[in-house]
Length: 370
Image (cartoon, rainbow, N blue to C red; front, side, top):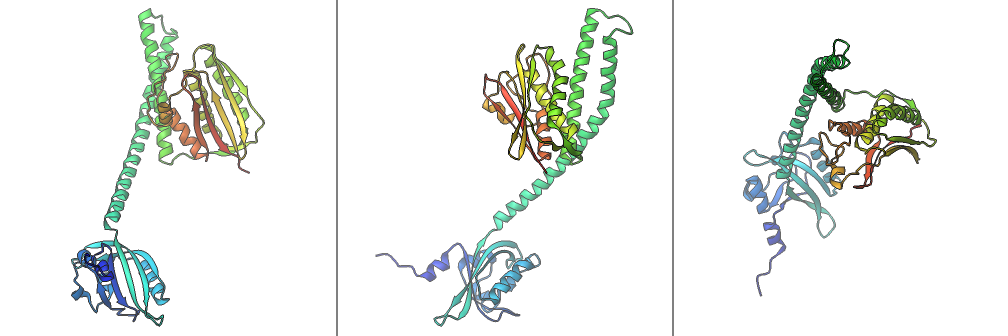
């Protein structure tokens, strides 16, 4: 038969740290150490001989949490087991983190004579957590810088861009002189490009305001059905160019607390996208529903639908999808990202139901608040 290991051998060579102290005195200078295993020496640099007769307080320093120490002291006074995390220091002064579990040890009369601390080194985990915190802080600072830059750049570019758009529109109308076909073609391209750039800049401004927390919602009670009717009338003019009919299916729903302009922006995005991606001579259906403690607004189209891959990308920023507008329209790739942020600011939910080849239904849900 092979060698039989005793419990002392197991404790001596386990990877977890084991310290045994006397139970008293708990006041200064504290209970004396009577045993430590090899794992203790490997971590702290102290040998058993160096710490015998001393107290575990020699391991503590300025970063040792007073609350953790007080928790340990209180439990020891009550002769109860305790588990916590604490910072200690090695013989060389190096800081390390421990998950510490202290249990009372009793003699055959049931009296607590010693305490055993089983400790696990958390140092690598804690340093990783500290590194993640620092990286997150740096990312937050970079994000704030990015938002500030977007806001300044978008604001400064808006005025000259609007001038280009306005002057090209005047020239297109030929109120200041006639145009030949080539000039008209160039002006149309300038006007279309300036329109696209205007949408992009407005979206960038919206993104920077939302992410920097500078947007404040003007929350009031509104009739969602009334907003849906108004947006349908406005967008039907655009839909007529592709011979698309917008149908309303609105049910009775309670008024809800929303920022009217923000929700109108969301509705306009959903309806505008449905027109943009729908083929000629099709229909779009706009619906409202009451769902227990929420109301839902949906826009269903008869377009090409979305693949599973596209659906995962939909509400991200600057995403390029496989589906393309059917009338040569352009997209900034920011509209749905803004929609998601606006709805989340309202405490709501946004999503899509789609199957490739069978159209799409975009929806948002908003809570009914008393």
